[in-house]
Amino acid sequence: MTNIVIAGSAKPLRYLQGYPADTLAQVEQMLQEDRVADWLLRKYPQGHSVRTDRALFDYVQALKSAHLRGAEPLAKVAFDNKLQVVQHALGTHTTIARVQGNKLKAKREIRVASLFKHVPEDFLKMIVVHELAHLKERAHDKAFYGLCAYMEPRYHQLEFELRVYLTHLEVSGQRLWENAPPA
View 1 (cartoon, rainbow, N blue to C red):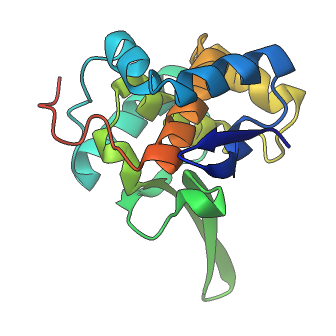
View 2: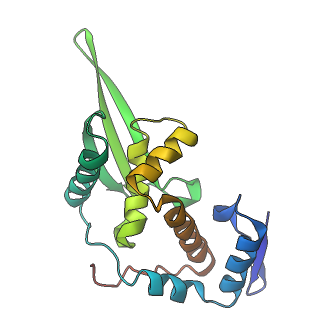
View 3: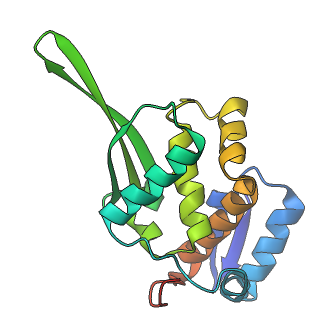
């Protein structure tokens, strides 16, 4: 595990595990020089305007309609204050099964960590695309990531940049778009 030293304490780059050593070295250097926030804010100057559960539901439904028309309908989409990045859950997809008479009824839900109320739209879209892909593909395999890339061609780059932001957040505690006006 790669470690960085910020203000005398070692912190692992846990969100960036699996990336090449030279990429990790660049991120470490940016963190040590306190340049990550400036880099991200230059690239993504403002957050999105999706702030309510209803707006999130509409946002997800629009993406689903554009890319996954044949997928099961969603009963609920919401921001969730209980999802914690430390548990590696940025969003969840669940199927809730209930017995009604002699039938088994299933409802699909997507929950997105509240952290994503205040990020650029590209980051929100990456998380939503990830959760929507689970409607068709359960496992994180080649087919799953192919579907993510189909829905968002920059998926892998956005995932990396989001991971850099999460690392910045862990190291500095500084949320970048929280007080910025939405786009």
